[in-house]
Image (cartoon, rainbow, N blue to C red; front, top):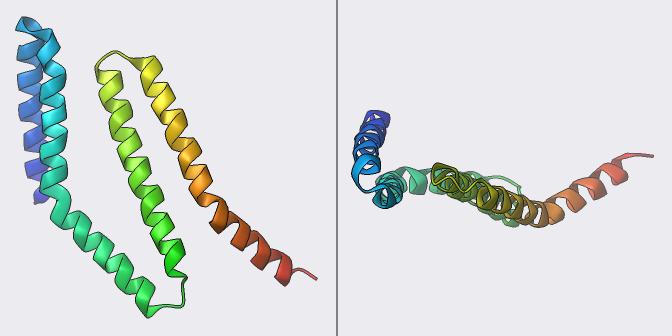
Amino acid sequence: MEIVKVIGIGFLTLIVTIILKEYRKEYAIYAVLICGAIIIFYSMDTIKSIIDFINEIAINSNYNNGFITLLLKITGISILTEYAVSICKDSGENSIANKIDFGGKIIVISLSIPIISTTLESITKLLP
């Protein structure tokens, strides 16, 4: 029931943030950042087990380990980008959030190029 603990941390931070916004609005973002760090730190064991599982599948299969690494990087970049965008939006900085989102998408696309090119090569070899 790890999700209950994560939700509990989130709700506790929500209450603290609401109180801080009434008295010291500039400190509310720090509460949100600390909450995110606590949840990420708390989730590290789960993240590590997921990565170990994916690596085990990659070792036991014929998949290119480079592709698995790229997919993990793309997933990590997407998660971190979404987290940063949420923080910016919570702070009322939508323009910065949009720029972070755009930058994250460009990085994901650039990392996807080897996978796309290999997939296209495989398809062209299959076609007559």
